[in-house]
Image (cartoon, rainbow, N blue to C red; front, top):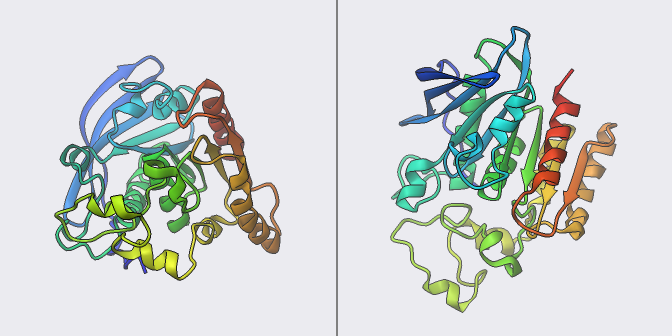
Length: 297
C-alpha cells in the first residue's frame, strides 16, 4: 500500500569529507548515496580503541543536533559514542529547509512511495554503508530518533529486518488525531502524500474526512500502526514515551508482545514514560541503558 522500494544500494562506501578529533572519539563528515538519485551528508563518530564495536544510526531533521549542536537532550550520537558505540548521524537537512520534510522518489511532484516509507529505505541504505565501516559489528546495529526522528526510526527498523534493535522516542505509535500536529501521519510528507502544491485548508474541516493520499484509506480500512510494530518481532525495541505516547499506549504494544510469545520470545517490548514530549536526562539514560543491554556483549 505504501509503494515498492527501489533496489537497495549495497555496493558503496562512505566518502570521507573531513576528519577531526573530539574528546575520546574521531568525528568524520561523510557522504553517501541514500536514494538512487540522491546523496546525503552526515557524521560518523568512532570511539577510540581497536575492538569490534556495536553501532547506532541516529535520525532527525538534520544531522548536527545528534552531535550536540541544537536543542538539549537530543544529542544521541554524541552520548552513545561517549559510551562506546560507533554512531552515524543523518538527517533531512535539504527537505527541512525547503519545508517538504521528507524524501520523495523519483520526485516530489510524482512520488511512487509514501515518503515515510522512503525515509525507511534511505536508512536501509545507511545500514548497508555503515555495516562496511571498519570496526563495526554488523550484527549489532541499532537505530534511534526523537519525534519526527522517532517516526523515521520506527518505520526504518520495522521495514528493514537487519536492525538488531531500535528506540523510538515519542513518535506516536498509533494513529491519533486528537494529538494534532504531534501524531500527524496524514501529512503529505508522511503517509498522506499527494502532489504539491500543499495547503492547509482541509485541516480546518477535519482530518480524516479531508485528508488525501494513503492515510484516509488506511483509516477507512481499519489499519493501524500495531501491524507495523509486529514486523520488529523478535527483535527488541523501546518506546521512550512522552506526551504523544502516554502509558495507555501499551495497549497497542500488547499485539507485538503476543507475536513475540508466539515465536517463543519474551521481554522484547519495552516502554518508558515522561509527561513532556521533549526527552530529558532520565529518559535518555534509559535509552542508553537499553542499547547497552541489547548491543554490548
